[in-house]
Image (cartoon, rainbow, N blue to C red; front, side, top):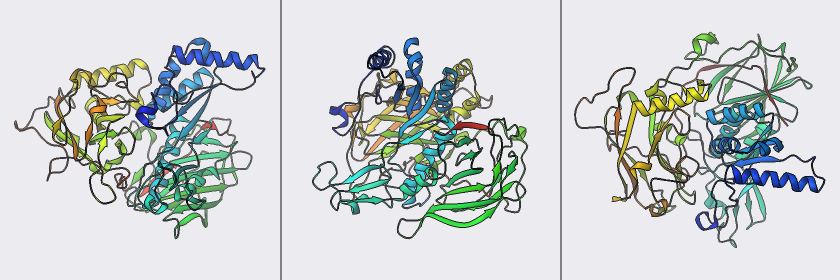
Length: 562
């Protein structure tokens, strides 16, 4: 079953979108049981059956929870795609797989998006690194499988891929796959994304055990037989950052360190460049991570019994000096302090996915949410620009929401990542409902009203990632079957505007009141709007955090790589 409950159909998504339609629960259960019976009949009972290969970990969680006991019993492996991801859903799916005694694979992912700060050709590579790192750290699968190595094409004889390679703008745009197929010249063109993939796959190999780090940009693995620690990290900021990896949890931290790096453009930059070796000193590996780069460290001569618990856990920390490593007591570093900043933006994907703006893409537009009081607010999504600079028409939507990033965490004082039980999570959602009310007053496309059903607009942390979402329609979310707007009626060539009111009961125990009766605007003081970064037309920019020293400690066994 390929993304069975996603609702793919040719009429809506075009002839290039593959998929099927098998609903969660009874239909998927019946499919799995029938498959098992057919395989047993043909003497194929030794072949594993996997499911449910939904489009993201949230939907896979839902699908697995609705399978019948009979279907669960015959399921050998849980597969999920991660075309969207959040830490809570990923860790929940991992725990479910472990509780049920099932293998867990991330069986398909890729993206046409970019990351980095003025990253050029490294933009797509850095986004790919983010995907791999997030999934291995949060979902903890024993296999990570990309969609396909060649996912983009140039073919003048094909009406769907008529562009030339020059028109693909590899220096700014994201693209699917790690290579381009140039059918016009019968060649395969490698990209920086190809070398990004190799920074991971050439070194983290079958038989390795992935081990935890406390840095969201880093993954690490250990092979007891080869006595090698492998660390892969990416830096999506333009500025270099100094890191110190604390290896004191190992019986022998090794000494000699190979360094491999990918950065810059394809023609003149580094592609798996081998740098000067480093040395582990006093159980620490110190290095400078180049801006907009991906770096792999291979530490030789390390020793540890990976089957035993590594009980020593030291958090990573950061400070503003480059003199020495700063030690941070674990008790003082958890829980993480609540962020006092949030982004406000429209989260959007057009019907054909040609225009997407997602939560990570506008981190540059952070606003101080402590100033967001009762009042009226506007968010504006401009239409994308074509190659000639003119506006392009956007029609339909598969994702249409407002995201206030970090806002649910802030107004409740609760970090959902710290919650363990279903009761705690339910109480968290209740507190959101009691604390904030968001009422959409109008939706305008090119200045004209778009009808919506206010009773079907959902205001909650629907992704369970600390964000407050005002959801009109999301094919992956709770509004998939009963959205607040008819997305077929959505069409704009200038801008899409959402106007809404915020009413807060209290923040930090204090009632919130306006300083005046004029309401407020979020975003740019000059034009009182937030203009999201446009994927496909502009490089997504992430907020720069000045990390001078980062101490990362490798901890206990996490999962074996198959």
